[in-house]
Length: 220
Image (cartoon, rainbow, N blue to C red; front, side, top):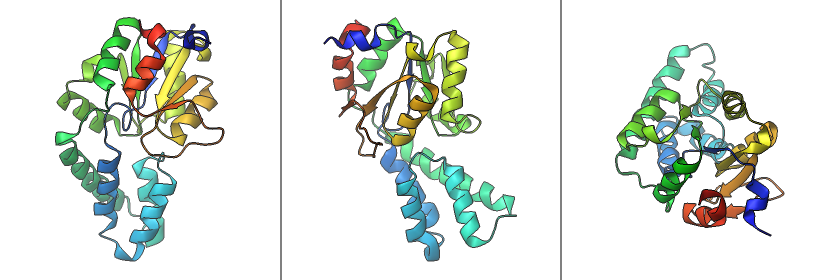
């Protein structure tokens, strides 16, 4: 059966960022290692928490560390480690490669659809990274966390475009993206960046070249 059958009514594409547009998951993990390395008594527990909750925002992970340290009333603590983490991430993004096929996919997609970005990266940092990569102009709008959680970002996009959920497609690389699509009712395709998905497994591809080929009729 033609792929176009499933997505023939698609009017908007929404992309996750890390692991879909750029190969940055390892950069984020290394940044967590650097930050959590400053707390050796909780390092293993925090890295396990990170790996078991990849789709959580960095701030949720820092609040978990704050709880373990008994620093729940110390807002300055959260600001300090968030700034430290962001510094590591921005340094690591200097040479970050695009996901194979992402550049070609973006060129094809923007000729056909409004293209949106929804990420758990904070909005300000996300904008800086996109500007460095000369990608900001590609997207009609960009949603970061904070202030947006991904399901709310998707719902806002649907409202902005005045479309039904089944008229949008989210491409992501994690169970968190998969759940956001389920909650909001949009279609979902997975890029396999090495992260886990919920059962039943979604339609999944190794890179954006394969996704582009799968959606060839839609993007043509």
